[in-house]
Length: 442
Image (cartoon, rainbow, N blue to C red):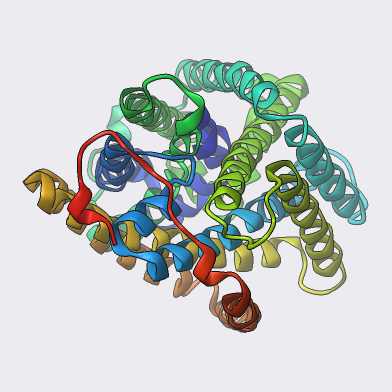
């Protein structure tokens, strides 16, 4: 369930589907299906490596063990950046979503965004600080609730839909629009391999973790394909155009067909999905941090609990800072897009590096399928990032994204130069191997 909630299916339905619809229109379900199938190549990397290496360090440990210390350390730094930005990014979106959804029915003061954002991020950090055992129980329960709600909602959309399969007749399939929508669809499945960060916390991890990745990923994909198809049936061709312009159009449609109470339930489960995603990501980030302590990544710091507390405090402080800054300057949606661009770059960069690690491991295992899939994943992810940040619908935001990346990169370089003098030589990668790959050691 850790991998399922890290994808955030309900959140994708509420937010990302409308972006895909901009390019794919009525063929939204086709694009979601193709995205799901192609994303198996990316999922395969974590699936294969988690079968070989047992570690809560995930990508950081895989890369360090296979490609050497320098690449492993670089991957660890990027992952800390990427993981720390997920909560502020989602908190900005979800507060904007709640205010905009309520504003459909009654006027809402804009300052409510900042209250909701700070409350959301604070509650998530406070909850995760209670420990892994409690949060895992939470995401199992709420993940099941999210899954069943999506299926019930899809059923209602089909039953009360305005169109049938005839809506596709006579409509040409735009390959260019399909490809652009496909790139965003692939990013919708990011996070599907987050259970690798729990490897040291489960029995028989070399079997349990790969299976959990495969099953949760498959369930997520099937559910999202069904929900996208039901959405098209529910709002029709004219509705899909309005939906692509305004993602809150679906809130209006649900209100007209089912009433205000169903809308409130829809909003609740969207917020729940966002909460599940953030809890899952912070669980993963906390476990990576604890693993880094044992690998001497933080120098003389030996207390895992202290490292986790410091990390969560930093994430909360970063979230509140960005929420206050966004409210006074760029606006929540604009900052959400900027952070999403930075997170996307980090996500893709880490996966490309990890794909290279899999290529080396696959060579030792004589696995041709892993070689092909890792190369396919690298190509797809690279093209996906290019179009996601160079999208012509956000020409002004692009410069802000690049500026944000430049500022963060400068801070990271300065920090790294100082840190290297005192800590770098102490770092080691303690990873258990379920298969003998001694000649892959750096």
